[in-house]
Length: 99
Image (cartoon, rainbow, N blue to C red):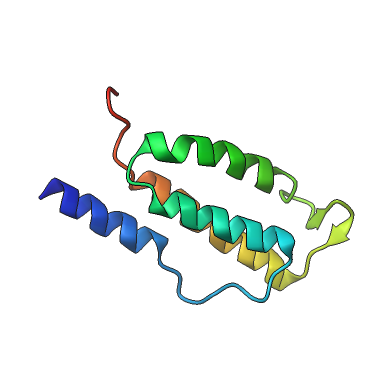
């Protein structure tokens, strides 16, 4: 029963109201990576992906620019949407075995 509840929580956390707008390469990468994270069922699966996630999104924080490229408000919103999906997914994950 507990596994069913966890599966429902993870599934609900990964749903989006709508697709992000047509995206730059960064948005496409963050979307693909957030989908991988959402597919995880425990923290052991998500941990290495989160390291990749943090590296990918670190460049996007704060400035609205990445490598000198100005992001549109729609692109910024798409990045925020993917970040929220990841946060919700990780919060719903079962602890790694042995923890």
